[in-house]
Image (cartoon, rainbow, N blue to C red; front, side, top):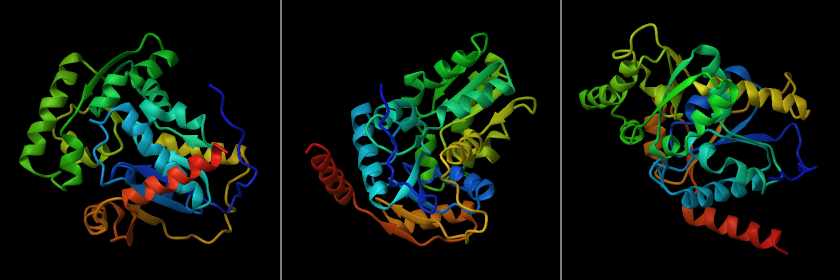
Length: 289
């Protein structure tokens, strides 16, 4: 599948677009803020359509196309899919359609997992688990590695509803994690960007010898390297600008839930799904001419 030439319009002072179905991508944003403090970011959470994990590939492809078209209109220089489900199912398709660097999270996560261990468990959405994306990526890197994948239907709604510390969440986590522990894993990959928010819960269940891999950290390293290669890194003398936050659902709910991880209550604007659909339709008609 061919990838279109990058647009000559991209500039180093442009922002980086980061998107997820909800608050999960904040784990990627946190790493970017730490590792690339001078880069400016536009964050989008598709909260009107969360979770993505029980959606069809065709639905997710439509959602992702709409988000990317909207972000390109805002002059971004790179788009980061801070969503494992989108990365697993539609990364290659959208890379072939848009003239902008688009990074997914699966490959950086797989590379880190192989460095960490040989018996690898992956907790993810059901769609990511069914795609076998992590298993394929890990075994392309190390064919001797064993991979166990568990689709976790309940985690994203619990996180989005701010129920991480509820007793029910601990019970659900035990149900998903105990089969992986019994299988003898030595490494566990957060196969959804929402799941590092569950670290306090996981640590109550997992034996201490099991290493946790957060792909968000390794995706950020990959993004920094890509920007350097493309000569699109912002100067270290650039002023630090606040992240712009947008959601397709309720801005106040997102602001309240995200405050505990950001350390502040963000100003969040709404971009309705109908507006995303219109922007994508307009960009599609233009490209068809």
